Amino acid sequence: MRNWLGGTFVALALISFACARQQAAQTATRSGADTDHAPAQSRVEEVLASKVRSEWEALKKKDRAAYGGLLADDFVGVEDDGDGTRNRLHAINEIETSNVYSYTISFFKLLLLAPGAALVSYEVTMEFPPKAAVRYKRMYISEAWMKDNGEWKLRHYQETRVR
Image (cartoon, rainbow, N blue to C red; front, side, top):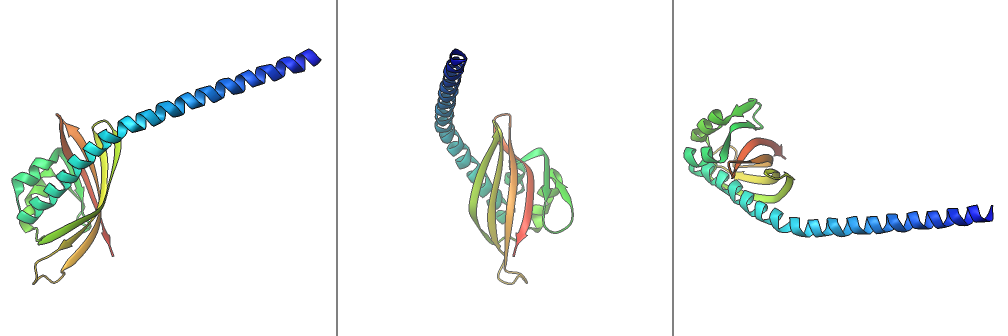
């Protein structure tokens, strides 16, 4: 009985030691991967933040070509106006009626979903022309960006009004 208890104790100690080593190795690997992942995320964040600014500049300038160049072929957009979804062509054609006078982007966040896929969220405050009935509008925006032939394209746009 004494040998059995001693053997059990040694076996449990070895299992505990092995588990502790494995957990330490996984933690080291994860922290190394996170360190390697941080520069990649930072680069993607810079690229997509620039794309988002380009998107809003195109709306402000009513630049159909620039706006269309950011959208994926299978783009879907949902705005807060209750008119349902918009495909790529519909979204590009709406540029003509845009009345964004100025805008401010804040609270920009990036979530990498997979290589070549990212979710971006931010808040935008739009200012409309001085004689507009409504001068300001705040929106919370979520966008899905996907790499297509090496270039980031906006695939899904969803906005929600912030009061």
